[in-house]
Length: 280
Image (tube, rainbow, N blue to C red):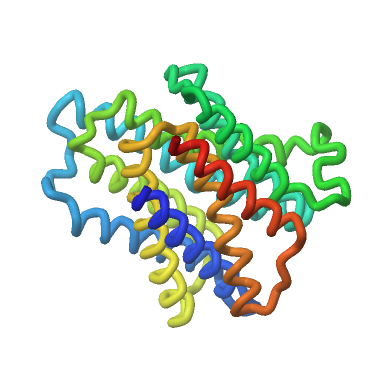
């Protein structure tokens, strides 16, 4: 559970960094590039084997999985930005968080990770908590079927989360560092092309915020992968999603003076109950 706690904290740190960085005058395209540059540098620094050119079939397989993962990482970010502009932040964030259902369900049916006994109760309670946190009581899910961009966002985010499980099943675990390195390298290359095409210019604050985001991004992704290698996906993904949302809400309440809603308190209670059943 240690890696679960660490990935929740680091993911929350990254989300709050994005929220604080996204201010008038800030070039988020440049921040995104610096973010991925930082993740690539950190990944390389912590690689046990610095050979990054594939020399075996196992490494080529890892590179293939990482390329897909990197494309999903960046496409999810771009889709989120697009949907916020078209549909607003509330519904876009809600649907984005529901992407956790994709890896949770697929891991059960594709990889046979079935909960045992009372763990089923824990999974169901965790999923109820996810829905509770993402429903605002004002029709947040109303007419979602007609919003194609939101559906694509949900699937993209869900499959991006799923790639850690795919690596756990099909990848060589000793190359987990290379999996992260290649993933972020692909995202970096695409984000650089995107920034150049938009003729983006950088300043000192963009670099500072990008460096902070990249540090949290690397740590959260690394800890999530390690959690997946140790725990079943049906435990990791729902708890990760709910824990992330709750930590962000609590920090917003304590430091940014944003009030917690009744659903937040209900979800906290549900998570505590779910954790008990999942660990029996």
